[in-house]
Image (cartoon, rainbow, N blue to C red; front, side, top):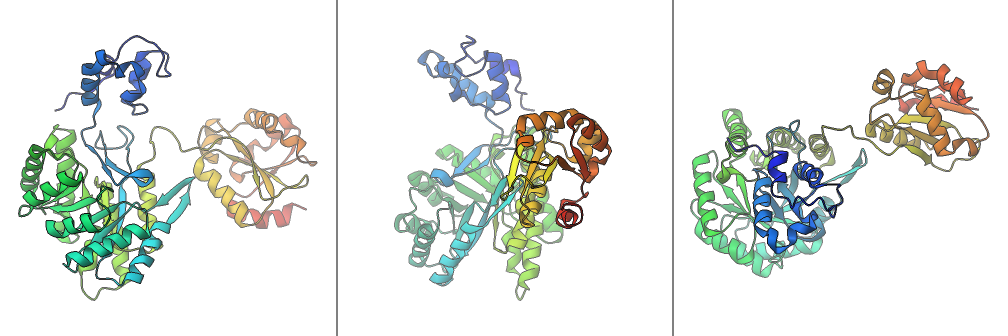
Length: 468
């Protein structure tokens, strides 16, 4: 069992001067931020002095997560995977969301390749204030032609700015792609090192400073052996592919392998397996004469399963938004901080172009509630004011029951927002689930309170009936 990192063990390696240069009142507070990954050792200016060199090195080693963080690509689109410290997110927030890549084959026509790249890069969905998108493109060498693969890699690199995964078991083909495809300085992930090609692959990875994937399907002992060999050579940016089977007992084996790898790294401190895990749900498309809709559906199911079982990187084939949306949504849910509700800033929001006669709505600052209400108001074309109450990030029904949604806070919100100066009427529409607070809010604010619908999708028909 690896030794548990504690607040005092982190504090031991800090300067202990309480200088405040890090922005915290003392070194103990800064140690707490380091533990929660809200700060890095670089945020402590004194640690950069020569006399603290040894302490800094030991501190970095101490707080390094059991799963190494691997960086793919460069620049603003750089993708970080791994960096996990715990098995399950309720123990500590997960960092570095699972990267999702969509594949492109070098046997496709040039126009279709460009079109597919543009489509992949343009996938973008805003949900609860976050932009959900695909992170990478995996270029597959199906032609086995080094010249064709190099050309396609170059074409993909020119067509979009996403980091790349170069997929071939032949190091000569990957070398040609790196030299002729204009991506040698972009740190693509090289896929994949096997028992047969590890020597040539390792030379390539060292020469171009690229991360590599290790592939040994359903063979954890071979994976560990290959990783130890790469480590001895000096290669440490590694991603593990233990095989992505999608049928019967083999699917069970794949899931069990993922669990065993992650458990060995975190629970037993096995540094040889302390690397990000990747899965390839795209293998479901290998079944011949398969309906595309069925294949996309099965792929989304497999991607979700593997993500729930610690996959840090997924390679998918479908680009259908209906198949990608549940995977992107699941990723967002897994990687939110379970210690605090997802909330937005309280205050006044202006929807459309309201005037002094426009209705005034009230909701809470729970992100899902706020964005649902705001989107329904915008979609219905309603010009209005929306008051967002600080309910500590809780939904309407929960915050009413718990007392976070209360008349006193509503009165304070009236004052701080200045809403009383923006409209001539004194009518407030509250959520249907807060109906029992109607009388108290009227007594405190002096406004007439109208109880709105329980579901914000019904607001348009509600206004037609109740708002002149």
